[in-house]
Image (cartoon, rainbow, N blue to C red; front, side, top):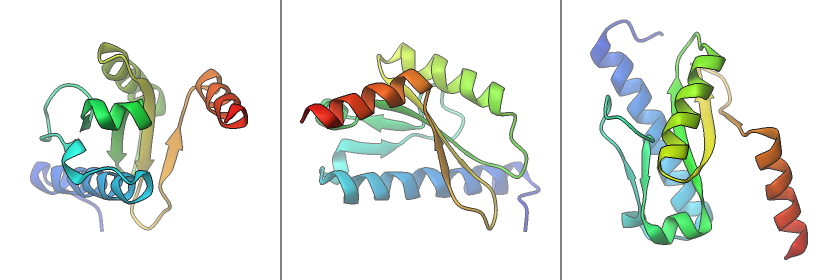
Length: 119
């Protein structure tokens, strides 16, 4: 089933944001008040990260839950919003009945891999 009204499209997007938030809280072991899902239509990243959350997860998330996605437009939005907050852009997207994917710039992925090897 696809979201056909603005209200249902926003609800679909909100559901993905809330799932990402819950997953990050579970996997990072941070307090649930350190990550908040922003209101739909609000400018900036889709999740607000407290300074404590940014210390362990320095990514600005743009979440897209759509059947058809203009990847280049979504990446530009993600990059603009993340860089305005001094974060690394991370695009997370899915569509109905499909897995969720995450996209990083290549150099950011290499940096992440390098930092994991150094610890």
